[in-house]
Length: 415
Image (cartoon, rainbow, N blue to C red):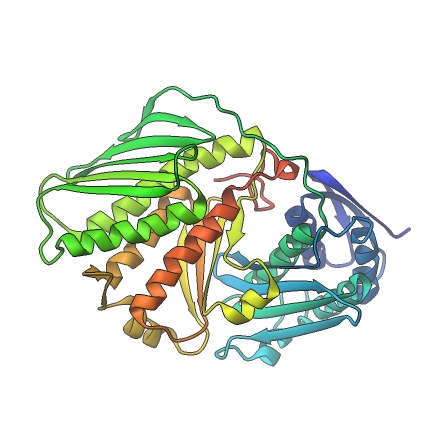
């Protein structure tokens, strides 16, 4: 007998049985990102009717708002997803200029001969909820990952619309003792901040974050000067770090000491790496204390999909990568016109800024996807990137008691 039940919380409680395991996996992503347990039995291949039945269960929740959006992602697959509650339901599917949408939909995906059953499932959800669902496919390297990005994004958007948040929570203020691990000295940590000092043969770097202090950033560079990186370049880095801290709502303090050879590459990559490591301390403690989103993006409402020339998604689940996705050009031109060989913000090298995000992904243990939807000047583009990155990071760390103790990926661990 067909049966579907969603309950807020206990996301690891799940039983999904359909005639196709990939369909089941996509339903798992929706429930997991919504912060719900799911019990589902479905004995036929009428996927549109399955979508309608799931929609009926979702509509038992009272809408908290009328629209929501996010950037759904996993590994090299990504899509921007918007959901609006409207009188006339419609499903709109589009793709970046370099992606042939018909080709994508025709591709087999695991045991599905094409994407048509997934479209039927999405259509059933759209009609059943009474929504305008907009999906903009960002990257296609593996159809499996692209579809996962779509359904992860859909689940996240639905969670913003429907899942009643628990009453306002306050993270613990307990401060944990210092410890040392693999050359990294953790001076202190809590749900409200942390401080780490990392020393290598090249540099010494202290990074601290405090959510209880006025949002902003202080940055000091000591030791051997970096050739061609003058005070203006360091001021430029300070301003970009301040964008992240201000968007996230914490005070960031960084002291970088060059011990021997000076290198702008080392400065940016190590700063990103240790900043990510500090945030990982905070994230894990928040995750276990009250629960967090664990994933976030710069997209909040469907109009952001149209208006943001550059959008950012972050997912913390042990995968370590940073991927730039061009929408209107090919990757070689994106690297030429934006990522490599440009000098911005008073003297910063664009390739060093790229290294910052690579280091950050390693330190936090996260995937970062950057959708470049319009051609921007390097100065404007990197500025937007740091601001949108801070916005996405803020959402990652927000409390979500429905996800206490678990990261955003269905494998349910960070490793």
